[in-house]
Length: 340
Image (cartoon, rainbow, N blue to C red):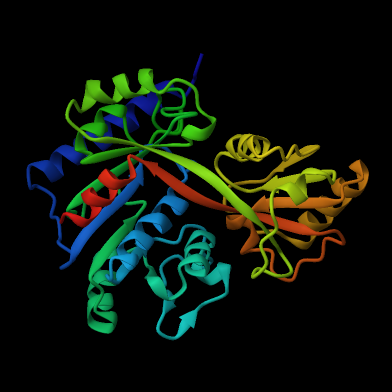
């Protein structure tokens, strides 16, 4: 029995009422002044939104366009401060200031995209237009940010755990009830590489939105980056032999473990920390101690964690998994993004 169920029902009803107010024009919405694509989800993290956002930004950059990613930058020490994480002056290499996911995006995209962390996306967009003249905006984690109008509402759903226990917060991890799928212009089912039959999930989606195009996204490990040298890329085969300790501070650690196993990297142990974990000296020491206890030859973590570990000394090699996204059908997905 879920004792928090009544609170979850109340929260879900409140979110539905809020959406109704925006639909009726009783709450104001604002255009960002450029083509705007929203990338978001129904659950609290864990759908693979960051690699998908990076993939979409690369599609636009490769088409000769200059995207600007607008993000709240969850977990920053000064959440109300506007920070240009990546711009003409380079990248702010400080995850406390930028947030871990914005810095991860900046490191991967480099000059391909402007990245701004600011809780006020409308003000951030006006600033971006004035300072950087982007061609379009990517609204990161914006499905519930109804204050901003968008040209394309892309909803990500994790195939391995689409709706958790079907309860909204705080009884579950849903930010909204599944009926909010009706607002989506396109669905991207993620983590298909470790999922089973997708048809029941697709049928569930269709019950809420009968005409929405559904795409599938698999995550692919392209290699492993040594923490001491981010420019290097080690082949997965080189990680298979040594005894490995994995650790992460993400919303879906089990999916990370399953993805490693798909590439024959079987961690002897997985240490799980809180999502957006800032690693203290004592936690680094605990990781070292756990590695020593099992006789590990190497450590593996995520790129999201790696941006917060610069300068950390683990005494054994530490790698981050370099993940890319493969969307199917790819050509149709490109056409959808570039059609607006």
